[in-house]
Image (cartoon, rainbow, N blue to C red):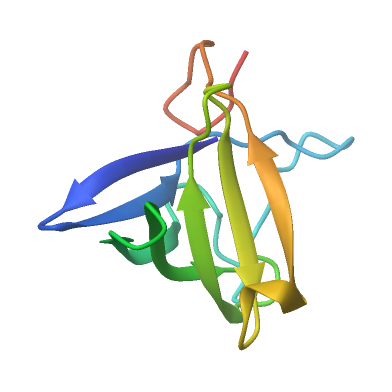
Length: 109
């Protein structure tokens, strides 16, 4: 789960919910630190021409940073497109709203 919040005139997103692996271990980032509370989306600015927020997204597994655009169509599910160079060379994920409960260690149910 990612919490989207304002950062001045921009948006940012931080990991606040994760699923542990089969052994019950929570995911770790490229440096071996827990991914819980890891900044994922940064510097998202609204572009009036397309109505989307543009910034960067970090892959928590390898630390690579990609260009990103975020938008929420009428179905209410956020779309995140990460790409290199131009959006055409990317991949889109659909993130539905989360209505569950989070625990302090980022586990959710």
